Image (tube, rainbow, N blue to C red; front, side, top):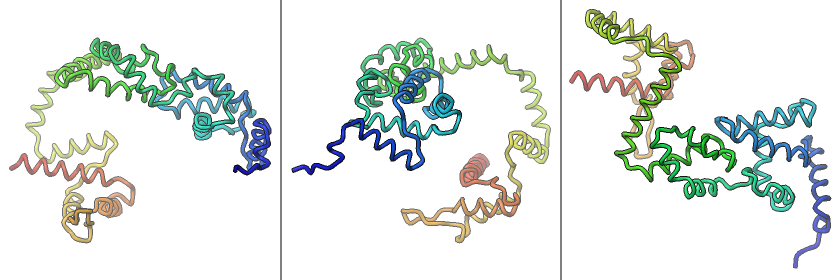
Length: 301
């Protein structure tokens, strides 16, 4: 037998009031119906905008809600909105009236259901549009997928990719990718103009590079690296890096039992010795450097 407690005797409205009082006691602000209605309306409005992720339009919605309901105070945040979204989707009893009111609202559509529906309804259209050299973003906007299913632009694009991989063969996909790339370069040239470097300039620079000594070439490459905001490798630093890779104290064991160079530890030593403790060298940059050195050795041999 189920025990009858005081909470079971209470009505739904009383339960909501008690939970709101509990939230206020904790220093939090409970959600009123008007605020939830505006939240859902704004969510529907901004779902079709070109926001890169749900976090970006959650931040915009939070600003509008704070202005309308909380006198500009920072009460609602992107995090609190995502939590409220989760609670709305998964709550059984407290938001039944909202769910019935917004039955066809894309907010309450399951992402898996949206993915399957897009595959069933629009797969042929998506393939045809992609063959007509429309980008994934353009396909999403034409079919209005973000507003229909309450998903972000990135999510909609990720749903399109497996459809294209299944429906189009690998050979055809390669040719289509080349066409898409050439179209993208044409659009770029229309927007920003043709590249300034001509064939004559390229030939002249290649001839100049041949006449230069190895020291001049390295100096020039170092200048280019610095212009990109990176730090070039010195001979001393490279030699020390290679030396440390072979030493036992700068190695660590992997699951298989084999040992590898501990790039994290080596990066710390190099940064302290050559870069005044600044985080210039990282484990990733060390692996890239090692790969480049291996390629050079292969070319020489």
